[in-house]
Amino acid sequence: MSPGKRRGILIGGALLVVVTVVAAFFLLNSGGSTPEAATGETTVERPGAIDPNSAITEYLQDLSENNPDAAARLTDDNAAAAVTLRTTRNTLNPKSVAAKLTVLQPAPAGAKQTGGTFSMAWTLKPGEVWTYDVPFELVLKDGKWLVHWAPSLLHPKLEAGQRLVVSTAAQDTVAVADRDGKPLVVSGAGGVRPVDGNPAPLLRSALTGQVTAAAGAGFAVERVDAAGKSVERLFGKVAEDGAKPLVTSLSLGAQKAAQAAVDGYQGSAMLVALDTGSGDILAVAQNAAAGDAPKALNGLYEPGSSFKIATSVAAVQQSGLTATSPVDCPGVATIGTRTVKNEGFELGATTLQTAFARSCNTTFGQLALALPADGLKKAADELGLNADFEIPGINTELGKVEPAASKDEQVEDGFGQGRIQASALGGALMAATVAGGKAITPRLWHDLETTVVKGYSPPPASVLAEVRKLMRAVVTSGTGHAAAAAGNVFGKTGTAQFGDGSNATGWFVGYRDKVAFAVVLENSNDSGPAVQLATKFLKAL
Image (tube, rainbow, N blue to C red; front, side, top):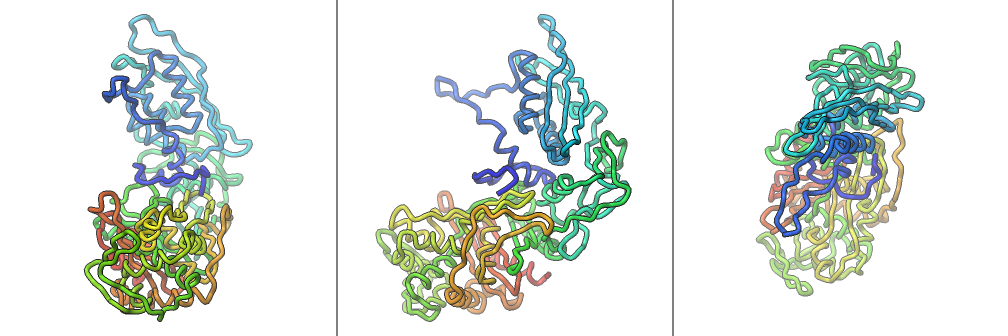
């Protein structure tokens, strides 16, 4: 987890692409919901404060406490203020901000506006504090005092259509390169910005923010117009010679292939790819339908049958099964007190490999019930789903797997429909662990270390050898057969119902050679499209 080191789940927030990951911190601090009246009737409380002093004092306090959403609600243009405050805060990436009231003009009785001045102090780097005074206006609207919103509230010279950017070099220079040295982010007179095409939109703030944090002698804040052309340098100085670029783990080729794959899907789609040897995050992609919150990195979903990878690890390691062990796959079975069904098929007496390839729920419900109460959690631990990493610039959640609270829940957990949760990143890490045979530490940077908050140890090699057989059979003769067009692919499909059961999330988790991947499609109601999307991605590599 990073950068705010939180422990919650962030799913479905509404952010702009330029806000991406860092804005998750702001959303968690954006205040509560509308209160209810004592009568039980819901009331809509108008934004603002009862007096001018409270309005400006609360606004400045929210700015200083890293809470732009709450500050925006104290203005007369909530939407515009929220976007501008968030994006500016993430662009400048300050160590701290201090906003203090200096002058408040008294408002005559009956007056509907007043004003004053406050000071802003941005601590941008150690020893680099940018201070200036800002004039402001307050307006009375519907009985509440609000701060009149204008771009000049961020800096008195900032005009409509303009924005603040950080620049580290006088001429355009590569600020972030991919693992092969190809440029992803440049810095120059127009600030720190992605290369043309913005190949990693979900990671824009993560990449540009680390450039700002790592900037050496060259560090300036500039005012630019809507086209990104520098209008004026407001603070600091730039380096005449560009500094050595930061190197990220991303592969430009893999990132473009992943983004093209999700963008070609009409519904909500996300894809994460990892290098099974180094732990490099090769690609993180999400389409517009999935929204702007970084759900590919920290959105938790029921994994459905893709979790049968963990159930198989448990069955092989704890129950002594192999890929050829005989198992039973009825179409419908009462397991404990639960009635479990397959999706319109039964195999009868078969092998573990065939039951896995065809995704037989009745088989895996029976296997789960035969395990100790913590059996599935132990397997999930060994596959990294309960691990925790702090990766500079991004906030991650891999999964959440706990011992089942009951035998019925244990049955459902066996095919990923109980309380099991995983993210796309967690699914890719699980596949990478099977492929590489070792614990994987995901990393976004070659220059900046990932902190292992909670590590893990992989299953024994003999166990993983059996699980690889199962995952290969999914593609050669099972539910993932469409991926055979992409070569020697290993995988597991999943369809996970949620809510009232009328909708389901589609999954395909797997690997080919040294690339592990996970595809998650919200509300797809079928894993087939996830297999097709993964195949498109792999064929483009």
